[in-house]
Image 1 (spheres, rainbow over the protein chains, first blue to last red):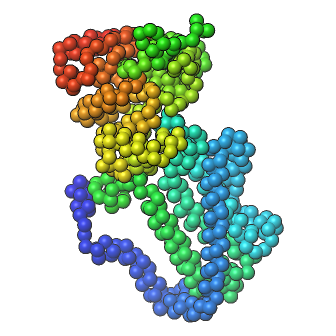
Image 2 (image 1 turned 180 degrees about the vertical axis):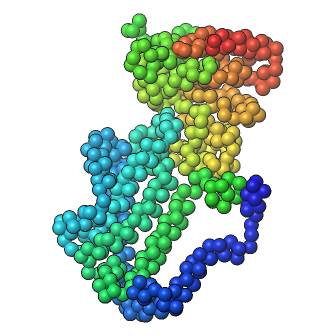
Length: 274
Length: 266
């Protein structure tokens, strides 16, 4: 057992590392080609690769505009939501009065399914980008608000005691102890919120949007163009993956100080970081 | 008694800290066991005093009360004739656990208190350079704490406290988590620093050898509730070398205190 764990530590040639990672996707693609070539399933359920390509050619001209709309909306909603959520978490931790005032609302809103609010949002903000951005912002801010408050509660008291004896006041402790401490803890929530914001965007665009990728999906559905839907889903996934990778890169830059699990050794192989 | 101003200089020695009838318990229920019960002690200016006692005797609690981090249930702590109500830069603290901020470099940690004081940049730089040199961290000043050993991190902690030039240094078992060799080395280094930069030190530990080696007086605390059981003067000449620990008088004092210590636990 131990021998096996240690053996895994040794560096192997790159191709052997890569192979297990791509074997499943390749199998899926082969399966897809086989199924569609042998016409085992009707193309309306699973279209052939060729259909996807045709669909791409068909949407080629409107795709960049729709992508831009979707990216702008998702990023605006995400940015507003993360900022608002983090700031309200910090403010609630800082002041008991504000915590008492806002805490109940936060607790009440947390379990509310955001999608259920879509009709209300359309009613209040009208059709267009405003209600969609508001929906994304709301969905992400709740996640961040709760995580921020929780992360602040977990700041080890020793750091706060040390800062107090060194003469720091409440405000300074917030900027120099609490914020640096919670950032690595917030990254996980930010990544979840980023992924969720694409989903929220799709939902928002399904309801009364006139542009964007989600709107295109609805159009494809109307004409039963399955290939188009799959293509747009792939576009959404790609955008979400790019965003997640960007956040992970930024995370590594700003949390250089954290004690990372080393990527070698028995412990690493047990927790899956090797 | 209440109207009398404590902490007034006596002809012989100035009293720096007066701990007056301190009680501490975690609940208001009078039936509950007090952690500290009627603790009285005067600490002189520039004195190095150690408080020893078994785990849970309330010695860390006492230190937190002096620091102003915990309010006593009854009684008062006076510092230079003023009642302690909150933490202040006249008292710095070094903790047992790792209290160095891991998100700051060594240098940023050391300048933390000075920034809080809003010391001007050039003066801050001079003090930080001096303190880093004092604890031998000049080379490592731009490293993050995770890149340092436990002993080095403890030096950062001490340097951070020294940088604000406190009148009183409160030390809560600062070297307890270190290995024996590192511990001995840090005791010696710290004693040398203190010798050249005298200040009042209240040092909490359960290591009798450490207490005797460092201190002018050793206070043995009793357990459940925490009280002063005995105060012992340590009159070995300063500066003290590490070899002092092997001198027969040192060992006999240690045996004597050890006996007292055992009885305090019972």
